[in-house]
Image (cartoon, one colour):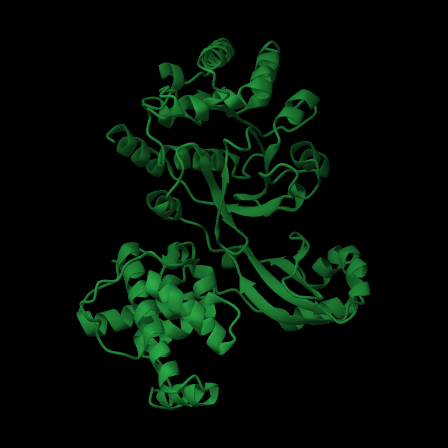
Length: 514
């Protein structure tokens, strides 16, 4: 049984050798290709037509590309099927781990671009002669790929295949008075992105006003399309949500893969809420945020999002470098972490008195750290680490802020104090609620917590409280979210990952023994 699946592959990255990287850049110039991925695909295809690899040692110091760019989401399964078949035929081995697959892609890319460079040199740099070489070589290949490739592709697909609605979309756009062409399509985990070309850019406003009508015409009234900038002149990206039976859910293995391969600075608190519209892992630095507000209605996936943030931190940082101050008024969401070595204070606060005490201790810890910084002449925790201070980062996570504030109103001023001052001391807040309203999130709290995650909410007013803009009321639920992680930046759509209780317990066990 393979340990990898197509979703895991799509959300991974592949690296070439330093020599192949240099030759790839050169081939871009020779052939007039705009991206390294274009050359890489040509190189991998060249290598797949060759026999077994030699014993040559190949480094991994070259360019790294996401699989979605290297292969494209629609063709990834075909490319991986071909690579698996080549390995099976020429080495009697199975590419059953991501590391084996990465090595195979690196070898094919390296060998292929070296061979293409030899072909170019043999043609004396004459483009037509080089192209003739490729055509003659292609004529010698079979017209159909082995049936095993199709079988591999089918085994990767766990949901209904997304449907290309380009023809219907052009007709629907015409009905709202927009003359457009579809010039590209990419299927993400839940959204299909259509690259549309407007023959008349003056119709942009008409398109923006007509999105609701477009939903009605295309029979997707419960899933509003959204617009994003295009990558060429006179183009826009139109994101169309798909039916749930064609969604590709993101497995917890994607988070594991990122955590095991990430080369991160110890002074960053990178968190992984999910993947973007096209399936690329979405990350941001909580330390730079520096505090985060998370809101979403019951069933939106808010709690799973919180677990994703916690586990992404735990899987990268040791318990000596990171502490978690967990506050859980519902007494159920954080129960799995009760014996976790990462707990600040050694326990989870589950009622108003213990929560108040924990927050007061955090305020005292903040003030103590600032006293130490002043005496040592440093400004923040990063400077303290340089001077040898053994101070862990502390991430404070309140699972249901609304319940806590209603139980004890004296807690809110202490939270605001932390939000205003704790960043430089290495203390960061994650505040979550399923009841976003102006009473729960006062102006002082919101003004001091710039990073936001909004999952599905019932009304646009709730979206505005979380994000300072509407839009979360149109999300698809089950982990679909809008993330504002960068100060002054816009919101980005992210799809959360699947996490079971067993995943949480496994990580805690691993990290407890680390």
